[in-house]
Image 1 (cartoon, rainbow, N blue to C red):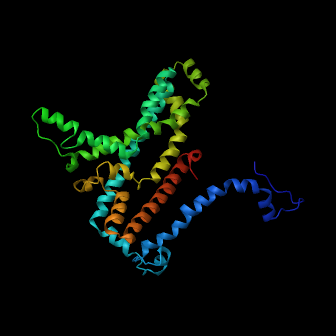
Image 2 (cartoon, rainbow, N blue to C red):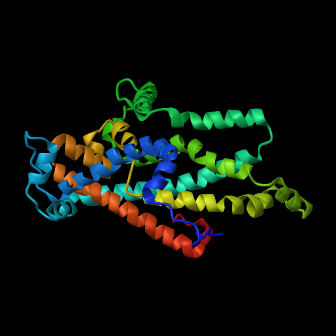
Length: 319
């Protein structure tokens, strides 16, 4: 129902509305200032992507507005480089695999946990699944190094005990795609399944009672009751995950492989490329161009996927 203004009542001025809602405005002021300072003001710095940025002793803002404008030169140079196709392949490829595996396992474990009736066993499962999520990537990298180190690693000690030749894992690119996929899915599976578990637990038990009265077994109850109820949430999460298709976790792709140069072809993504460009070559223009393209593609992916979902399922669209 849409409320319409009564034309007979006097109109309230803009400043009068602000004064009347001053308490609510004060409540949102810290969050608003945070967004303005850390999100909206830094947007101006995207001008660097179109400049031959030259830092001056007068400060960043002086350098920003006095560096020569080069148009799309930074974008052309980035697209023409050999690194672009490696970065694009790794970023999109890993994210597509993560999207499919996380989507499947999150729904699977969320539904499975919702079917458990033993509360104590459920807490054990939830704790064990959530534990990896709270381990930071540097700690995870240290644990992994304890297994994969050439001279002190557990795996190589076992290989040597069987008279085998030690494997230099950090110089062997072939094993890292599977290792990265395993670590990424394993670390996030518990967190990703919580939302589906909570949604499944909120389903009215009357639906299951009606299904059992119709003779439905456990699988049929899940198929015809549980999955349809979590589908809107799953669709919303799918849209949000598609928007992050060009973003990766720098901890997983940079810290865990120890930034090893021989592994660049299988670990280099947009985020690690930008970080390396800033830390080694100091090419601020090209790294900003890569970051800006990354953000624009993410926005387009969200809008495009949401438009598709809006046609298929209007109630599940994001905007």
